[in-house]
Amino acid sequence: MGRRRRRYQIADTAQQLVGGFLLAGPFVVTEEVWVLASQMSWVHTLAVVAIVFGIGYGALYKADDDRDPDQEAEVAGIPVRFVSLMGVAYGSVAVLAVALTAPTTFLVEGGILSAPTETAVALTTVKAVAVGAIFSVVGAATADSVF
Image (cartoon, rainbow, N blue to C red; front, side, top):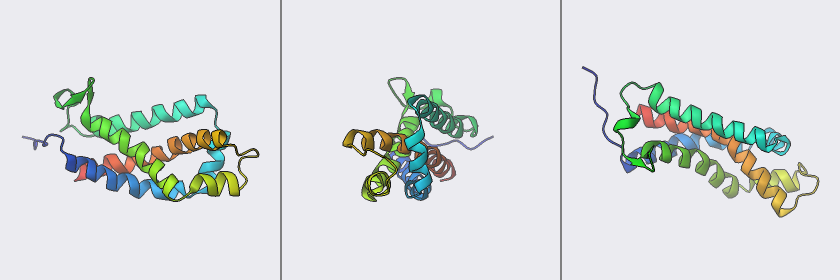
């Protein structure tokens, strides 16, 4: 008989945070991510968001036979664990980007944006956060599954 997983608890989000921040850090401070983000269209950004959601769902529920999304607590029909994972994946990248002044450092002072208006910096930061979330979600889901 397989071991039974415990229900979602706040400690699970704490584990996700550790993994999410751990893998997000190196990508927030990599100039190539910011250059890439500045060149992405919104179609590319939406594709990246879909990839992050797919990786997150697959890591939580398809790669782990002990978890059943239908048996977990839900918010608007979505498992709380998955909502937490997405919040951590994007939130950890956004928090690190702001805390480390990455948008100003790369987009404005680094000259990646030729016309660095506040709107252009904000929109490019959203794209960079989406790119960083690809890696953050892997760390967050792994930490959630392992611990």
